[in-house]
Length: 198
Image (cartoon, helix red, strand yellow):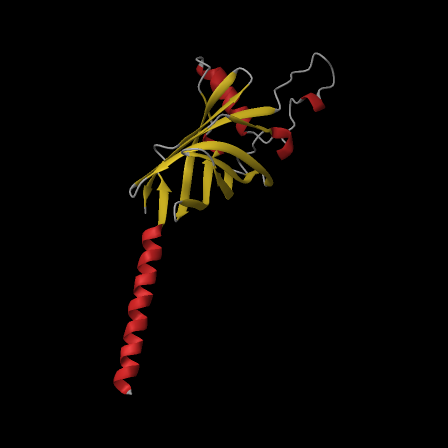
């Protein structure tokens, strides 16, 4: 009886190890390389970049099941103005309390809610975007590729409406006259991600 019980326990342990091993091999976790990953933005006649502070993607049995990214809004850059003083003025305005208020909210966070596979490597990614302490759901398409070592993704160009996050300065709705300075409510983005297996 003792030998039989010992055999059963041993068998159960082996089966448990096999199951854990299978789960591990089917699960991939990628940590984003912040030197290789970047977010490009554009609005009206200006465009620039926002660096990634951190990011992680979890893939189980070939499907993205979770992920989150932290973007350094206090390091937002403009790339189209050659004159340094004007470029720094625009960057400081974007960081000010009237726009992204990076003193109180130095990062913007995105959390993946779900991913819908499309044709080939295309994926529809939906999730929650936090800006200035407010959250809204956004969706965008991305071309995703990965193997056992590396993950890459490039999104299609997509837009968000800044009014949804209460960034209303210089918007049409706040304009008091036809001569007022108006900045587009829509901000465009393209996301480039590159990560390595953890």
